[in-house]
Length: 357
Image (cartoon, rainbow, N blue to C red):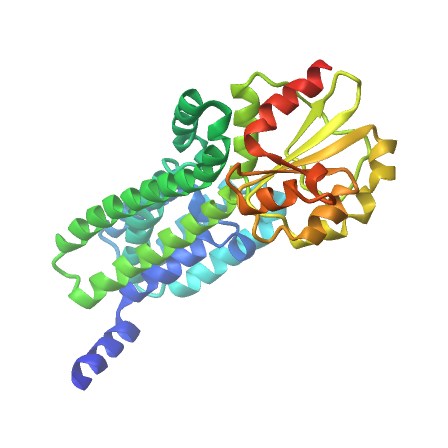
């Protein structure tokens, strides 16, 4: 076993295919190298030129110099007008030239570009940047069947359905492209098993890294989307935030009441700790901007302490909790909290009432 491990370590150090990972990292690194690898058409153009040079009847040294020159020329021409990237592009060309020491290195660069980077770029276009498409149909079905009684279920499901749908799309893309790359590598007789694994793991690491960046872009927007969906579903018109109003409250929607005052709507799973310190949004500040109240739709209320309810409630905050919530039952019968909590099934009717009275 130790001998096998030693052989793997040796091949990992000596094989030119180890650079499949490092080329992929260089191509996508935006901070240091300008993310050249996101330009699929540029990569395809470079690879076509490199393949043509490799097929020519020239000395290895001449071919290598030509390959380096072609990469430098095409990359710098593509980004000649991107002034903010020029220094990073120059560094990319310099560092890549240092890594292209042999024609085998050029072949690895071609495979990395054609079989790893371009397929990943293409696959990412099929991964949703927003999980709304996975949630709207199900949410509508619940509200159609249950009416306002289904509000808590819809808000709970929204995030879960979106995450599951997007992860399923990601998984399908990874399996599809991994299978394609495996078949391509298996057809290349000159590549040993350990070298094939170097390429496949480089692909997997890079794809997962890019997917995680896309997930970050989706995170946080899900429950804001459900607020928009609810307003659209019930035909409730949102309005803009009051000018110059600033507070440590995440408001997803603003509702204009018939009396000219505003209500801020926030849809979150839990009440964040920092909302306990909303000194900048006390009743005086809210009144100055003609804000009647702040309404919070919450699906998980275990961290909603009595202190939070009374502190924020006295400052004009109302909490809509699940109809079967233990916290709702307790607070709604308490003289100091009952005016600050309401069942979620009343949310839409309360909104409509504010717009009509």
